[in-house]
Image 1: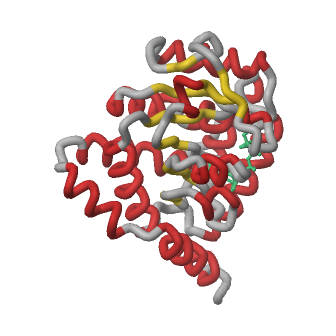
Image 2: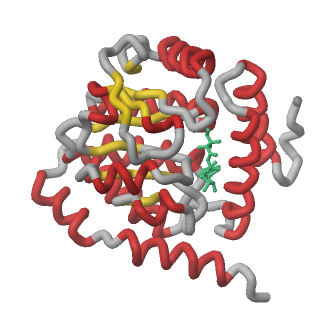
Length: 248
Ligand code: PTJ
């Protein structure tokens, strides 16, 4: 669909088109459109901007990812459609890999997403041939199957856009989890180490810049950023922001 640039919600329509394209080429699940709709509702209540609390989370996320020994970026059908280039750029700076891990699992869609990333950078993506997979029994969904070389063997995992039990389980395995989720009440938002309550299309370019800028920051300074950060308090600020949008 051609989007009229003068349309007051042109940007929102452009994002929708990316997801519709994702469904058309088979990388995004049809349910991904519904998930995006839920996100849009929260975005509206958050004033469709990166709020101060999200900027604080972005700094903490950059610090945790830069301090990680072995980070992995987990991609799904929505993140692949909305910000594949940023995911690849972040993986490149962190010298880590992207692993496709799907809720609405089909082998076909996994292969399509892997190839989608390979076209941007063939060296950045772990594939189903990248060694053994491990099943994390306490995860209920298909997301329980992870690569030993990827999510299973990582100390920090980036899991944007999901509301599920995976984050809780990864945390209970001693891992740190960074997420992006417009819904501050989701299970993932509440159990992650750092939750960026913002639209992934706004947050990812900012996270990329932050990681680039903080690359030269000392380990003690990165640790200080993390020490000062409190995810629970940050989520409360997002909830307060949403609540305040209901007053006249
Ligand atoms: O590709 P698959 O099969 O792995 O499926 C991906 C989806 C996203 C469909 C799947 O993980 C799912 O069903 O997710 P949920 O449970 O709907 O959770 C998605 C979360 O992301 C919700 O809390 C939404 O509010 C949030 N969300 C949706 N769109 C955005 C978003 N957060 C940030 N930016 C968005 N654009």
